[in-house]
Length: 327
Ligand code: AHM
Ligand code: MG
Image 1 (cartoon, rainbow, N blue to C red):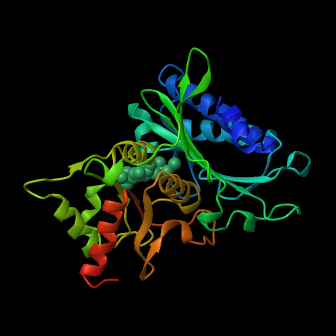
Image 2: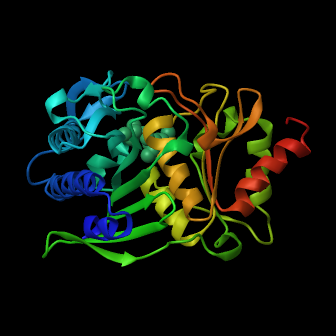
Image 3: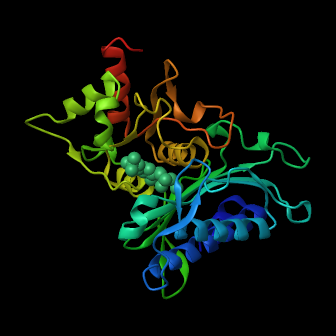
């Protein structure tokens, strides 16, 4: 249903075809997640992906589903997937106007215990009529045209934003096999919403002084923030948008660029967060405080630190760097 909705809003038929392909791939991945136990789809596939992680069977299957849907829809020129070392060039006879970066199944560590996972994607328009090159995707996040994620949780939900048309929420109705539009123009709660911080605190010994200090402040003995961490970015960001608070995967002494990938994790989630009225930063990255969407990636699997959520909490993180004289 969302394709019709988007067609109605933008009148862009090729974009509607692309979104039709994306939603089909989300539905097929949702079905694979639902049936994983029965179909023996839990466990490792025996390969390692572009960033050196062990691939799960469902990582491989969902990646095939997305590549198949996107290369055959006629609307894409280049695909970048977390699971493929190199960009995928769509054959010229099937090539279209868009380039897409995606993580087909994010939250791999949660697959085998049936905790929610998700797909994350960002869509750009090619910069010229010539055949696309990798430069069509190595651009700032400000150039994103459409970003979205699909969460495979208690229900399958698709959240999508297309520049200037707000953030929209759809739930898969399994009996109909369709995404039903359930909420238009999602906005972060007024004033920042619930006081929740979400991060892997197991890494705290290696964080910089500002991150350590702001998290310590949020453990106020009288009015503490709540800590919530699923460990699947899609679920943690989804909760942050709907309830409020902040999600962080900061840089640390062991991983100076953080863990999350710019093109298919950082950028799309930052874009959605800003479109929903929130903020997205890297914190202190390469010597300065940086807005996440302003990064210009040089390689397709590059990483960046992520601090995204309501203005109240993202600005508290940035202020902490200033208070400590680090920025
Ligand atoms: P993945 O692409 O290997 O699944 O890693 C991305 C995930 C995010 O969804 C999540 O926020 C983060 O990695 C969790 O990492 P950690 O297990 O280090 O807390
Ligand atoms: Mg992943």
